[in-house]
Length: 216
Ligand SMILES: N[C@@H](CCC(=O)N[C@@H](CS)C(=O)NCC(=O)O)C(=O)O
Image (cartoon, rainbow, N blue to C red; front, side):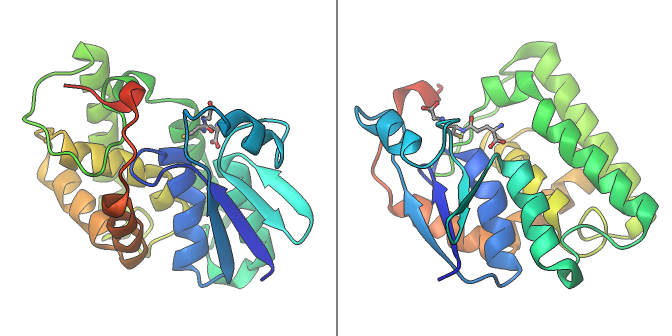
């Protein structure tokens, strides 16, 4: 098998999920290794693959690529015809801006509402107005993109940018955030996508409990 992806727990590891979705959705042949996070041997196991000691890690034969967004970029270069990024220079640039915005931002929402696929929360304002602003920004992104692309995904067909936002979509659903109709529709589309369903089913089989990622 050419590609191997090293990931964390599927229930919790939002960064792992992003490039895994791209590998799976675009039909790459891959194997995976799951390194449970927050265990005594986690760091040593991660270091055996990558000096950054974080998942996700992609291994292409013997070459290692780490960081979710870099892995998605690398995969896009390996399959240029797959349209992991949209065609057309300006759409591609916009998708990359949105992916980078996700990668570097949304901290209040991410911190207050860690990804936890097996939970369903009663809504309360976790993360205060800063997290609410993140949700409003997500609504704005989706409103703008739906107007331009017609949906169901940010640039029409599912792509790398939707993979980057998939963990936010799961949070909207599991934390029951009240959101605009457009965002609700987008969340349902992302959660209905086949590779996400596959990841989620596997996540629900896991029994690890990471106290640091559990909130009330
Ligand atoms: N910016 C990185 C973030 C990676 C990251 O923080 N991964 C977490 C799990 S979701 C991790 O490996 N944590 C392991 C640890 O800190 O021991 C990316 O996009 O891949």
